[in-house]
Image 1 (cartoon, rainbow, N blue to C red):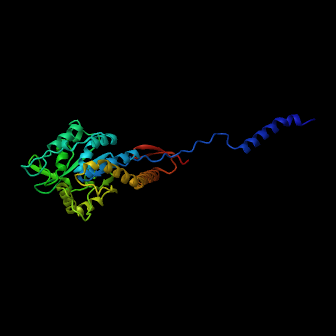
Image 2 (cartoon, rainbow, N blue to C red):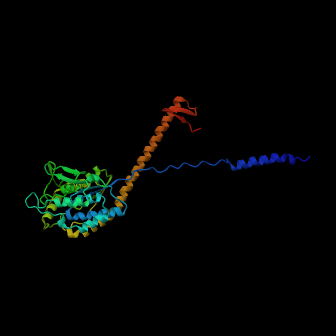
Image 3 (cartoon, one colour):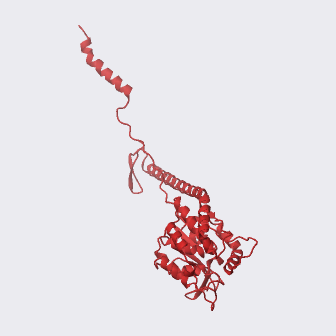
Length: 345
């Protein structure tokens, strides 16, 4: 009797079993979970624009370069000339608009001589000029948070304007003692913010800036004396506030210093050169700003990862305590009012 036909089904079954054993588990392997990178908020860049009269046109060049490299400030603080540029920028103007207004500016638009008060210039024309350009919007209606820093004359305290009449705040911040009349607001009088805060780093921090780029356009002693009253007063304020400025600048993350020392405080005809100097100085500072941003972002990622790991470890300890209390061999158990399924088995 031939046994092969009878054994054929058994042999086929055995071959199938062996083939399946060689191929392994035919069930598809579940996909590996990929942990997405932690989401961290963007670092809020703030810019602190210092005082320096006609040198203040350099601020436009700095802003222009920052925006061109994707480093747009989201909060703005300004002192004196910096408050003029800062107010227009925070109101929603882009760098091209700022430059157009700078080129078109006629000194007579902002200079109203008054010989019968506490200064040579009243300042009302400057106030009206700024309010006209910002469409008479108050500071608190601007596109970006903005602060204008002034000095309260009665007690020398730093005053930070973050709401109300924009032109009036800028006028107060820009009223150089002996050149402009003090500005009366309420029961107080105000003069140039450079007396107490030449570059308003602290004001930018108070507005919520996490990375502060400070722009210092103050004069440096050159061994010569300015021939104009405005230049003499500007240099005097700079000398008196040098130590104060150094302390506040030390609290900035990045300091940009445009080369405008040879531009006089009243040299409005040098506006193009000042803007160019601002562009060059800002361009040189871009790598430093990017490096600082990268460090701050990495610190935030590390903090989020550490917090996530700590939460996971705390949850694991809580589950272990619940299992120990209710029975290690239960597939499901109560933990903090919720039913937990043991996925380890």
